[in-house]
Length: 211
Image 1 (tube, one colour):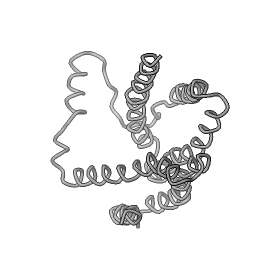
Image 2 (tube, rainbow, N blue to C red):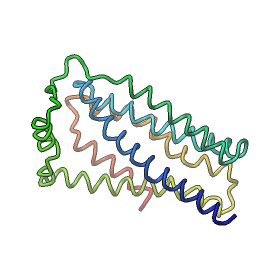
Image 3 (cartoon, one colour):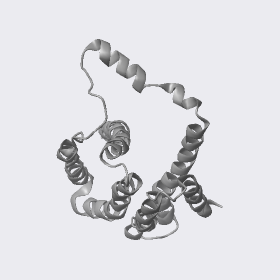
Image 4 (cartoon, rainbow, N blue to C red):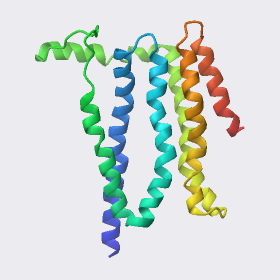
């Protein structure tokens, strides 16, 4: 019986920490690329609206998942959540290259493909100090955010908060994110806005709870 439980746990870890993580990482790369092809003038605003979906999910899914666990158990919960995530397939199929795209047509023969990969995978970008600064800032910012989302509910339960209320804590973080993301994205789309200043002020606000 213990071996069976360990086997199930290993399978869950493999699927959630590898396959789901790989798909999520691919999705987060493709969203800005696709939006940059569709939008030019209001690109920051379009990207802000698109990424709001993450915050909306953080508001909806914790209590929804808790309800599923109580009602259907962990097996039924994983089955339902898998069906929900499967809807990403037809949604992704809707995306098509814009007709006015300036991207060059890619040939499929091996010579051109090799040349394309050499140009696409260009690690000389890492020589840019601005990129390295942004990478470090993004890493540290996401570490703080994920630490809150992952560990705060468990800590709240250990402090005596009911599990149903602890599941709502990620929403406390995500609701202000939804409210502020759209106006900040709209401001970043204006030509008079200094986007470097916007990023710096955003990072300062993020750091306040950790002081």
